Image 1 (cartoon, one colour):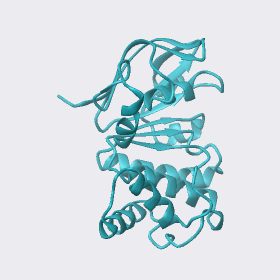
Image 2 (tube, helix red, strand yellow):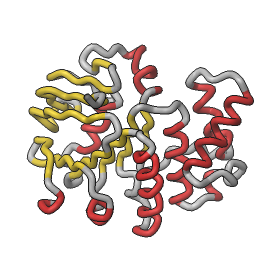
Image 3 (cartoon, one colour):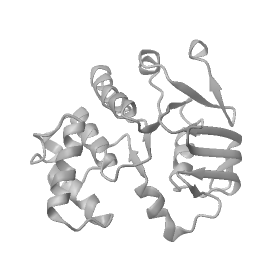
Length: 227
């Protein structure tokens, strides 16, 4: 029986006091790649934010990588996020330090202390995203696609059980989007579970996977042809 990474039952998601999505029931198994699609304003980002506890779960029951979102205390949110890799549309790299410095900052913040182990880990994740020679560059010296690869490398630092990618190709041109998508495909094929919010239907058609749609305050699975 495959391990369940995400399970939501009768979940409602609120942004402030406004109901965004309702009656969500879904399960994501270990090793799956799941798209979350929908128009701007349909609730994709609110849905993703709920999974990494940026929005509290007020209604229904939800478990993400063995954390109960309903009873999750604020002090435990960092422990949940250590089991997640989060990739944002706008990269969120620190501009005042080079790529190695960016990655080392995350490792230190999550409890790593041994400099040699940190260096090895940084080299390992940069190699996985094809950026092994770019550690000494600063973010502004890299293209958008390269910055997003670094952001994916950063998401891999603590060997996450689940990667949440919120519009990771939203700021990239089509060719670069495909390159970033290939990196995510490789990571998924090595056994990592990925949930990716996107409105890039060309990518979905090129790399078909299970697809959830946010529409009319609901979240439901759609068959590829119906997209």
